Amino acid sequence: MMQTTKSQRLYAQAKQLIPGGVNSPVRAFGSVGMEPLFIRKAHGAVIEDVDGNSYLDYVCSWGPMILGHAVPQVVEAVAQVAQNGLSFGAPNALEVEVAQTVVEMTGMEMVRMVNSGTEAVMSALRLARGVTGRNKVIKFEGCYHGHSDSMLVKAGSGALTSGQPSSAGVPVAAVADTLTAQYNDLASVEKIFAQYPGDIAALIVEPVAANMGVVLPQAGFLQGLRSLCDRYGALLIFDEVITGFRLAPGGAQAYFGVTADLVTYGKIIGGGLPVGAYGGRRDLMAQVAPSGKVYQAGTLSGNPVAMAAGLCQLKLLRAGAESIYPAIEKTTAYLAQEMRRIASNAGVAAQVNQVGSLCCAFFTEQPVTSYAGAVSADTQRFAAYFRGMLQRGIYLAPSQFEAMFISTALTPEMVEKTLTAFKDTLAELV
Image 1 (tube, helix red, strand yellow):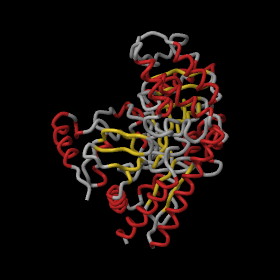
Image 2 (spheres, rainbow, N blue to C red):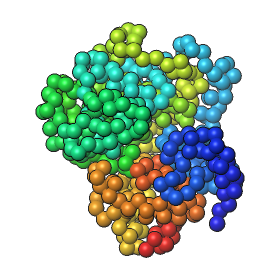
Image 3 (tube, rainbow, N blue to C red):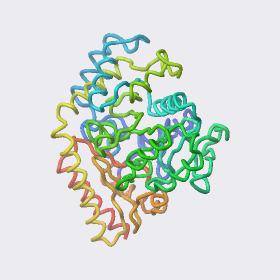
C-alpha cells in the first residue's frame, strides 16, 4: 500500500484555506472516493507525489504535456526569457512569433492571445455575436467550454429547450440564449436552426467531445455542422482547447478535414504555462478591438514567459510532426486495443474510445457515442478501476468524464506496465 501521509496533511490544511482544498474541482478526487495527491515534481512520463510515490502520468496536466514533463528545451527557453522580466504589459517579439507559428500550422488568418481556454471561448462567442448581430448560441450536451456564465448549461428536456444554469450564481438570463443539442445528432441541431432561423450567432462544439470521456464525432457529423451553419448564416466555432495541436499539427480541423470560422485554443500552446488563444478568418478577427468594436483585453495576454514555453513546444511539434503524430497515435491505438482485449478476456463489459493521442475507458456494454451513453456507464466501477490503477503506479484522470492523455515520453515498457496494471485491476473487479 502506498503511503500518502504528507498529501493527507496538505489536503487538511488546504481545505481550511482553499474552497474544497483544491483550485479546480476535478482535482478533489471526489468522484473516485479518495483524497487528492499533492504532486511535487514530474519528468518525462513520470510524476512524483510529496510522499515519494511515483506514477506513470496519463493526465499530462490535462493535455499540455504532449512531449512529457520538463522538456529540456522548453525549460531552458523559459529560464532564459524569465531573466529579462516576467511580464511587461506591452507588446513583445515572442507573441508575434507565436502568432505567426499558430497561423502557419492551423491555416487561420489571425489570432489573439489570451490566458485560458475559458477566456478564449468567452471572447470567441462575443465576437460571433458582435459580427452577426445575433444573440443565440448552440452548444452540445456534455461538451465543456469553460466556466463562463453562458456556457454553464445543463441540458433541458429536449433540443429545443433553452438552457438552465448548472451552477449557482449564474442568472437565468445569462443562459437564456444558449440552446443545447445532442452530440452526434444532426437532426437535433437542425431542429434548433429551424426554430430560430435568423437568431443563431454561432454553434460551438468540441470536435472530439473530450469532456465526457472521449466521444468521437461520427462520420459526417462535423461536416453536417459546417453545412448547417452555412445554410443558416451562423458561425462554426471549434473548441480545440484539448484537440488543438494534439490530434495533428493543424488540430481537429486538419484531422477531420473541416474548417471552422473561429477556433479556440489553450493547453499545448503554453507548454504547461497558462495560455489561451482564439482565431479565424481575417474579416472576423478584424472586428476585435482595437481594430474593431468587439472589446476584449488582458493584462497578461502574450506575456513573454508563456510565449517562450509555447513557442518552443510548437516548434518541436512542427519540426517533428512527420514522426511525432503517427507514433503517438500508434501508441495510443495499441493501448486502447489491448485494453479492449484484456477487458473482453476478463469478462468485463468495457468500451475504450480512442482518437489520436486521446483515449478513455467506459464500463458499459454499449458503444459510447453521445452524452447519454457516457453518463450511462458504471461510474462506481470506474472509481474502483481508478483506485486499482493508482495503487499500481498508474495516474489517471480522477473522473469518468475526462480523457487519458498520452505523451511522447511514454515508452513501450511503460505501456506494457500500464496494461499489466489494467489486467490485474480488472481481475479485482470481476
